Length: 556
Image (cartoon, rainbow, N blue to C red; front, side, top):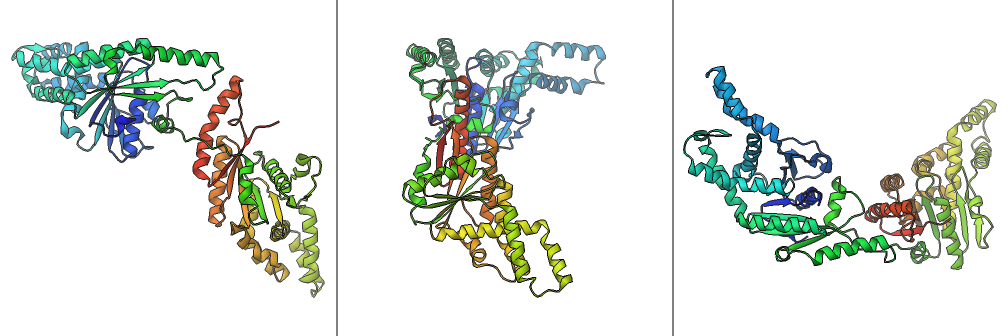
């Protein structure tokens, strides 16, 4: 938005109720704070929902918004301001004047006028007293709907004129003699409002005839008050992407018709357009998305990864991720595509559940399928250790070794060694390994060094494939890790954690694969349309985490 490039120090956001003033004011505040500016966001709306939108509990004092460094916010509470004002006026006289006089003063200060002007008094301190906001680069006001805001903006001139014309008597704020100190503050507020270099009024509207008429009426009244720096934000503009959807086309046309009939006075003001977003603007992440258009998602298919995967003519491809994300189906699809390119493939799994054969269905020429069977590997490993390390032991020593080999650790060592043997086969061709769910896989990879030491202790020496395992897993030219996820929160976040865990072992994923995505498809069912729109945020999140991303469309 152009307004963000060189904004004045003070920005007021106003408009008809429901047009998105708070959302735009909050998004503007966040955008400026993200640029390193120290920003104070003030709500003058008696029905403020700033707390909910910013996900921060606010009061009448500047409160830091934890999720946004450099941003503070506050709500001006009219009732609290009126109470504080009454106490400031009446308090010094308690115990000095008769009780009847105190009651008279309290009654005089109990009207709606006092509530309104006390809130205005707080507003004037923020706007007219430079010392009150000296620590901030920008002060942004999220105001109440138009009528209330206009009344607020009229008051600096109204009270300044009233105080100049009346030197004695009383008002709804008490004796006028006690208000002369406020005159300078009110006058400073008035001058700040009409200074176009320091203050801008932003009229927020939607592409609706009533909202635009209200905005034009407000513009005219602001001009009458001497406020000339006025800009317009047209919020939630809708453009139909499905040109066959009659409701979408009708909604788009209604907006275009309203804009065509926009009052001439508004047309002359600088105008900024914001799109209708497919989600509510509550929360910091959503508010940031208002001004930062989502990146164009490159929905690259799985085959887009193949040129780099086959570049060296051999190697290991590992599919990893949370259970249920489709690692097995992705591993099978990669193996099939490698075969189509003329490569022989060994497809195997470390998953104890071993669904590869069931998922694959009929055998495919060129793909050899196997699985690491924990029971068989443990038996083979046990026999090997007894033949080597147990060969020269007496009966008691052999019994101790057999007992040692019955521990759960033995199965893990055996599976680890089998894994190392299969990885070693990648030097002569392609090996695609469908790994177990995240926790089991991490246990296997974490074992690369510790199990090396354990094998040395029990078997006397480590096979060459075990010695070579960790360097090969760390070699991006030899081993390619595909992180498989679904376009949903938990799978993406768990895959991100897995990526961090792998990085600590100096293993870095080659690519992420977003499986079973609706984004590449055209859907019309209302539930699927909504789910499809919600996928976008997770595609964007993955794009920020991955070097390469491939997308597999949902399929039966």
